Structures are given as structure tokens and as C-alpha cells.
Length: 310
Image (tube, rainbow, N blue to C red; front, top):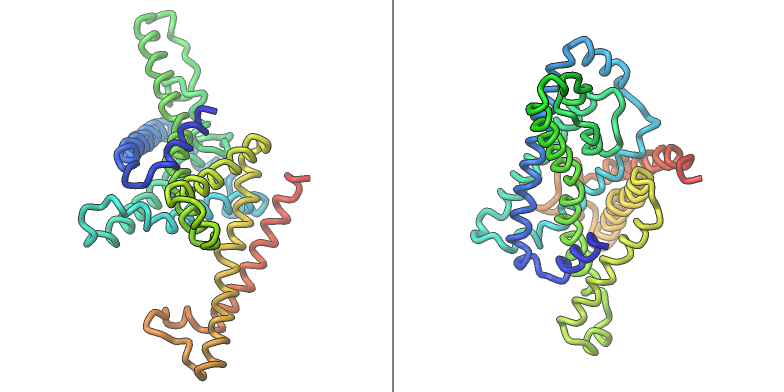
């Protein structure tokens, strides 16, 4: 209920009005990621190389049974690109409109990649959501060890417990604040697109502000209601990722093929090549190959996630 109230308020605000809130949320996420890296580095150093090598062997190079779980995060990352037009509105200098998103996405890619690698090597049992691995953080030994010297040094033990509890809470709240930040941005992007799809005869019956707010509310409520019904987070991510992959990667390939056919039938062979084409990547054979590959990938992911749904 609290989450719904916060995100609804943010969704009803324009991105420029959210700028200050988003800055503070971004600062918190940077600090939380820094805390994760610091505590993981201590644990990896304390465990030693033999334990790291053993975990790496257990993980292995491939694990296709977990293949579908990667779709949700991948689609979430791709969705970030659709939010860029709204996100760049508060920029004072539009000359940096390309450099800022590229730098931000590049830094995020590096941080999440190393966080995933460190998390996999630091824990024997890994939670699907990385921040939940800090639920048992004790600040003893490597950070997750049992505390056996509390009675000998009660003052130190009390300070350590406060520190460990604060660190646990600080990191466990990471996904909450992360979603509070990104969810309104995604809803704003979706609402802006849906507003243009509403017939003009309907839009004229309402003021611009009322129509915008109605569509934003329609975008923000259904996912919250569905999340309250379906409890398994990894299954939600997998199903959403499969549909997202189909919509964002398979369908664009199909539409690209239709565009190539239309251009060549209407304007002649080679007319589909424009100044915006990407060399061999825009060739029909490459697009066809990607189109077929997307079906194979979606099929493998669906087979993997089907036992979790039934």
C-alpha cells in the first residue's frame, strides 16, 4: 500500500518535477552499491582462493535450466532506452544529450556485471535477488560468519550489532528504492505513448491534464495488482521477460523485414538502404537470421519456465 501510494504520486508528476527526488534516489543507489562491493570484497578476501575456485566449478560455464531467468533483467535493461526522452528533460545543456545516457548506461553495465560475478563467487547459496544475500549479514569474520566473541567484549558486540543491522537494512531496501525510482519513469513513457493512441474524439472530451492523469493511473495500477496476486518474483520476471523479448526483439525484426519488402517492391532493389542503415546488420539475410534466432531463444526460455508455472 505504501509503495503504491508513493509511485502513484510520482507517476502523476512530470519528469522535470521528479528531478530532485530522482537525484536523491540515485545517490542512495550508488552508496548501496558501494556498500555491496565493499562487503563482498571483504568476504571474498576472507574466504580465500580455494573457496572461490570451488564455487566457480560448481557454477560451471553454462546452466540452461536457469536460462529463462535472464530474460526479465535483460528486458528491464532494454526498457531503460525507451525512457531516455523523458529522463533527459531536466538536462540544462542539451548538448550532452547523448553523452549522459551513454555514460550512465555504461557505468550501470560495469557495476551490475561485477556485482553479479562477485555475488556468485562469494556465496554458496545465492538468492535470486542479490540484495537478499545480505539478510544474514553479521559483520563478523568475512561478514556472514557466526559471532562467537560477543560475551568477551559486550561494548564492541553492541556496536557491531547496530552496524550489521544498519548495513542489512541499507542494502535490503535497495530494490525497493530502485523500483520506486524506475517504475514511475516506465509508466510515464508508456502513458505518453498510449496518449497518442487514444482517438482524438475521446481526447477532446477531457482536458489535457485530466486525460494525462487518467492514462497514467491506468498504467500504474494493473502491474501492482498483478504483483499482489503472483508471489514468485523470479517467475514474474521470466514470464514478463519472454513477452518483452517477443515484443521488443522478435517483432522489430519482423517489422524490419516487412519494411525491406515494401521499399524494394515500391522503389526498387536496394532502396531499403538509407543513411541510417547499419551496414551488414541492415541486410535482409542478417535480419532473417536474427528473427529465426529470436524464436529459438524464446522457445528454450518458455520450456525452462513452463514447469514453474504449472
